[in-house]
Length: 339
Image 1 (cartoon, helix red, strand yellow):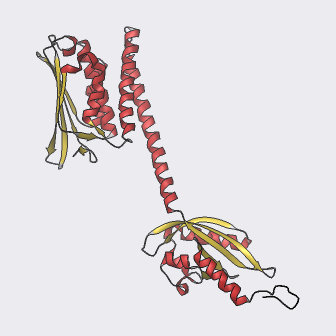
Image 2: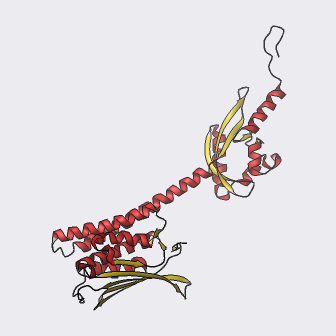
């Protein structure tokens, strides 16, 4: 509307208030307002829809009834401190949604004035639950990565210490060390491809047998398709590498006629109701076998490290027909048979 001079007349207060309420109720954020006494005197429709409560229930400090108990004191203290100082604030807290679930909100509040006088606070909230969950997963991933790096470094340290312990032929020791690192890297690569969740035992064995390229046709693996946890996979991969290299140097795979079978089963464990992984490495038709006078790294790896990591047993039998290695270990929850 315009006056007699053609100038626009100020809008009626009622119309201005109605348009503000309409704008606020259709805004994609939760909006609140408080008076000079710190008590909230209005909430927009998205806020009320989120909480599932009426305007009367939320007025005053009613809104705070929905704040998570663990966040309540911090939330109210932060609000009061900012209010007393007449400064803007930003805070995060969990608020109970209409379905009873607590969701993380980002709340931004700021003082406002009417006719040059402090009139209270306006604030807006957005749901940041998805962001919080992402941050939590990232923290878990970083913690898990740190744990894995420490474990890997410990394995490398142990492998290096055992490989170079008695020196011998330095070039031979270096080749052995490099081979063990490649076995460790292959296991980690397989786990990375599977997002460090679970890996196929058959695939793990196939990768471990890669060191026996010229004799792969003489290694036969047979058993159910099982999924292994990262810890079990790494330990078993290192153990298989030692058996493969030993068979190539001294065992069945050092001759043209020798062969190896690897069989495994998953057996029920009656007392606990769990399962036991029973894996047998059997060498045949190789050179005559003699009980070694000293234990090399491979034997130490199998009888100490593998047992400690898998919490199981490893039995080495130097039979006339060939080496037989029997590994038995609990099959942890989270591992299992692939359908």
